[in-house]
Length: 204
Image (cartoon, rainbow, N blue to C red):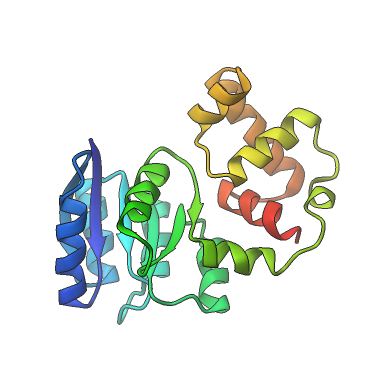
C-alpha cells in the first residue's frame, strides 16, 4: 500500500483530491495540509511514500516544502498544480522533485504518477516534457564520457523507471543500478536523478 499526503491551500480542491486519492485501492491517504509549512510537518510526522503538493501556496510554497521534505528524507514530492510557468518548472526541477503533473491531467495519470514516484521513478506531464524538450540541444552530446551501459541507464531514468525496474529491464542487480547512477552523477556533476532526466530531454 502506497502512503500519501496532500497539500493545497484551496479547501475545495483539497477535498476533491482527497476523494480521488482515497478512491485508489492501492493508495492510503495519511492526511492533508492547507499549506507548505503544515505539509512539511505532516510529512516528517507521517513519513509517507509520496507528498503531493500544490505549488502556489501562501508562506511556504510547494517547491520550498518539497525541498524541506527531501532534505529530511520524509517523502518523495510530487507537484500537482495548474501552473506551468517556465520559472516554476525550472525551480521544481532544480529542487529534485519526483514529478510535476498538471491538475487538468486525467485521474488515471495522477494515479500512475503517484505510483511511479513512490517506486523511485520520475514523471512529468506531457506539457512539462514539451517545455523541457523546447530547450533542446542534442541529448547524446550531453553525456559525453559515459559508457554505453551508463547511457542505457540514463535513458531509463529519463523514462521514469525506478532502480528496480531498470535492474529488471537490463538484467542486472539492483545494487549495480545504484552504482551506475552514482557514477553518472559523479561524471556529469549532477545532484539527483531528476536532473539526469532533465539533461537527457533538454541536452543542457
